[in-house]
Length: 323
Image 1 (cartoon, rainbow, N blue to C red):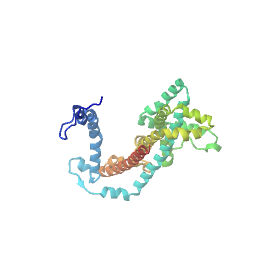
Image 2 (image 1 turned 90 degrees about the vertical axis):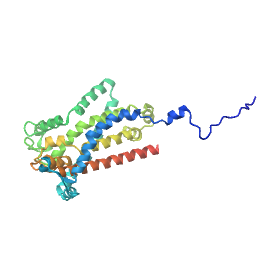
Image 3 (image 1 turned 180 degrees about the horizontal axis):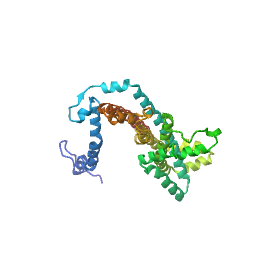
Image 4 (image 1 turned 120 degrees about the vertical axis):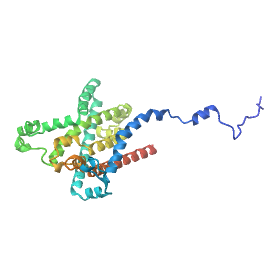
């Protein structure tokens, strides 16, 4: 039998049903949950960044610290640092160190992650626990350890190199000062930073490898694919988002390395300064502090890192669109 009942139509001005109203009603619950975190971040990060941005356009010294109003100098601080050859030297040190440290961190961390994935459960847990000790070591402690290892008085590295034949490593290692020249100082700094940072990369790569289907590796072995080709054809494409995150985080960490270099090289060896140490020396490293100059250098460093982060976000958005 055909249904002859007329269809019920809602008038144009009629209010929607309760379910529709519930869908359209704004939900403030998630925003209330993240509000405390946003407030803490704003107080601890955004407000100091705003203050640094303001001081970078001012002349702030001892008089201003005693209560006198700061003098606005416009872009004079930025013109001063950009005209200073020492600024470009510290920027070159920062960029070169970041390139070397980030590359070695990713390579060593990836190799350790692949090794952990091949080990058994017990051995993998044991090695991962030992590796994470380096990640848990505070930067000050790590800097002191490596300063002792490469020190001129009782340093283990100098003692070991001095025992080797002179034909292999040369002589005179007993009293060699690793922190006298920028090249040797940054060599020690690179070893220290890579030692501390590679465990995080290793654990992240290991977590990503656990999500890769084993059937893909079995098919690759059947096709006769070697380890190198298997990594670039299977592992890397699947873990590419993880590698992008690790690259950006490593760049941010290595660009603003301060504690280790401060402990190892100190303030006396200006030839080994990077941007972070240069900003600190201008702001607090003398009897006549120049907080405006230090803020300008810190702002330049922050803008560089923001550009790197923006490029990363753009790459991630493009990858999401192409999938």
